[in-house]
Image (cartoon, rainbow, N blue to C red; front, top):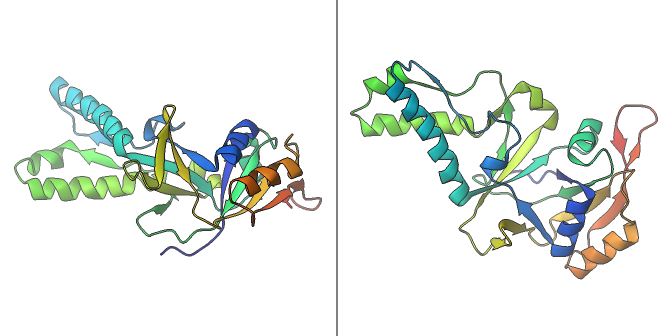
Length: 232
């Protein structure tokens, strides 16, 4: 099990309201990421137009394949950084959900931030083209790094990603064109309203109680007067 540390999911106020009413988070897909480098291998050693087409087809097929079974929920390790509220919570008009859960090791991924991409070397690929075991090992190592690393420009997020099996219908439901994941019991500790959030604490608490989150606290964020931090 991964240590039970608090993680924070930021949403705009309208999305937060929908989440509160449904008692579920909407699950994202790889094809919906806002960074075009996400889940895309780099390639070197390409020599022919045929190899170039092979690469383009491989990239497209990989993304489609991921969308058939893998969902992602993105969290940060802190609610105190103003940039997170500015970018992902509607310029402090949104909400941060504080979640503490005994994640399984194969569910939660802590992201790393290095400038080098994961690169498939076609010269190496040619060397092992007749060795299926070597090919699988080579690709597995690349993909394992691919799902865990982002550009250093995103390091302010200090992101954790919950990987969700879309085919696990006990935990993930499909409705109106989207997948939804219900939080485990007692895992939602606080709902933190941005200091410009239009939602009222009492209304949010009523929605939480209605959906079985009676123990969840509702608090409102504020600007620290001594540091560039968001506090409650």
